[in-house]
Length: 475
Image (cartoon, rainbow, N blue to C red; front, side, top):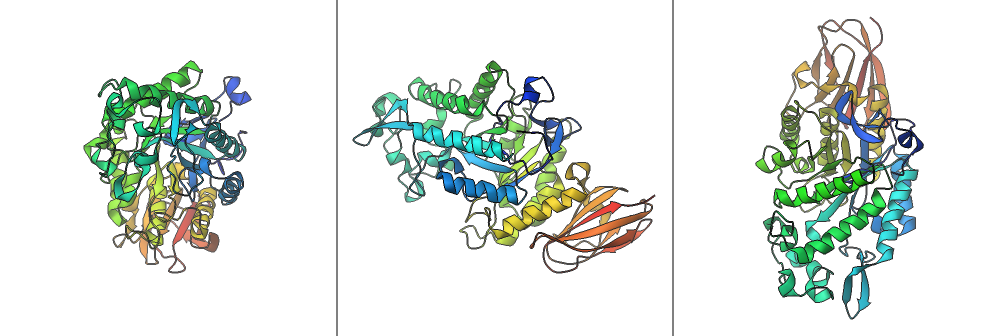
């Protein structure tokens, strides 16, 4: 990938990051993907800050047919998006998904042999995202692949189920015929195999073989982030084992990759989240996606709690699953999704992606408009130059407006639905240019000037979702 502008890079998040090795990297220049040295809340690409924004209509795009995948990536890049999520999931939700293992007939698989179609699909995703400067956040394990909960038969047909492979029995593996509990109950022995848990060498052998095969592909690239699990409640030793394996393999290849774990708890103050917060030596960034189960002021305050908690050693904070879409079973709306995106944007998130339908907006027209609006604001005020600053707003109703600022120089305000606040410019001299962007259309709207030296009224030009970019223009 070339160095180029800060967007539209698209990031593929595996919960570990990697792209094809560039000549710059080979020459020993700035590392490809790292927390930015000047502001480690944000990512940098070859030493330049980059804000990761995205959305996609599925979580495991690598499984998609080639034409559909290319169409989705082109739509994302065209909107200014530069990151996707990619779970290595093989559950057959759409019918075209495939398993990583070779089918040998009679409903049986051989865990010692690969299904090359699966890995060719994965390689295609890495290649096509690299071509478009799209980053990928990978999640290696997805607990919903190994369950029968909710009436699914995913465990019944999965190759890891002893009845479906020729490599081990129920007795040898310790697996049961069925796992009807929600995976949040953490009763599936699949997630207890590592040496510091139950040390199940029969199954662990094949799990490690799978992850090593994944790394054979991903470590050729530098645009990948690695996340161990999807919203897990597993023991900390489980994720630690895989993060350490990933980092060992990367080191052996002369590379450094970025890793994290994603916990299930909606409350970011929950003890389980400390397993990533408190271990920067292993987890290079944090994923706080489950905060997107919250709304309004609680959503904002939870994120800022983590920011304060990590302040002694800042790291990028990613939200790879922004929930909210009309008609979903959780009662979240399109408006919830847009608000969550913009609150996280102003609060300082390093990566923000709309979750797949119907839990999120995916890459529908509203998501595209939102991405375009965010890039317009970024072009006026780079988000890594401002910090959350609601204390500068007066007359603010709960969830009425949000602010990020480099006081005296630049401000970004977000209004979910009209209203009015005062912006404290008492200590800011000179004049400021203000430009409004209509988030629902993705287009610039009204513009004007305001003066510093006092508090000034701030109100958007309509009742839609609006953001204001306010920048000083003279002394």
